[in-house]
Amino acid sequence: MRRPPLPIVATAALALLLAGCTATPDDPEPPPGGTSPAPSPSGGVWRPEPGVAWQWQLSGGLDPAVDVPVYDIDGFDHPASAVADLHRRGRKVICYLSTGAWEDFRPDAAKFPKAVLGKGNGWEGERWLDIRRTDVLEPLMAARIDMCRDKGFDAVEPDNMDGYANDTGFPLTGADQLRYNRLIARLAHERGMSVGLKNDLDQIPELVGDFDFAVNEQCAQYDECDALKPFLKAGKAVFHAEYELPTRAFCPPARKTGMSSILKKYDLGVWREPC
Picture: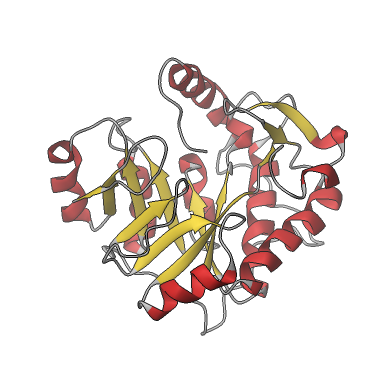
């Protein structure tokens, strides 16, 4: 989830600190039946390498002219023609989706039963999902990822992947989150797309093998970037954005470690300042 400005961030950070203790190496392995670790992607799945430059734009009119190899854009907001245009320009394109929270402004919002909708996540019109209910959520998320595939996207950025560490209104555990995140990874890989782990830093040791890259917000501001090293050591890109720090504060270590770091504004529009 994109971090909102203070004071909501402070509350979320406290919730993360308190709830993060549920994600330990002692969490039981998820049971079989669609909840085991995702299979390794086939040879055709795109695997971005550390250091690749990117543009992350989730609001405003799409500007396809930023000279970077990777674009991350909203899956619902853009048609297949926009993805095709980016491909003609030599870009790989990531499909942003919210997989852990309900959004009342999406065209499929009415398909989510009220029983799976929890507390608000700090963004207007959004509520956490009960990720334990994979019987309900798997077909809904499969349809969303089908949409990304059909529009020609190369990868998926699933957002709100750390509900267990927030006040969702449901008693979610670290094991619940591992199970659900692996489900999302499997759905993407089965459709020939790569998939990124969004935030969820505490579970990276368990999930680095299931995901093809990471997407992170503000790890420098919160002194969390070391947690992303398993992705970099595995030769997998870490797409990283800061909102409040100047580039001089986070770009030198980012370049040294190989993170793909940029400065963005909270609205995630066209503007960017790369490292």
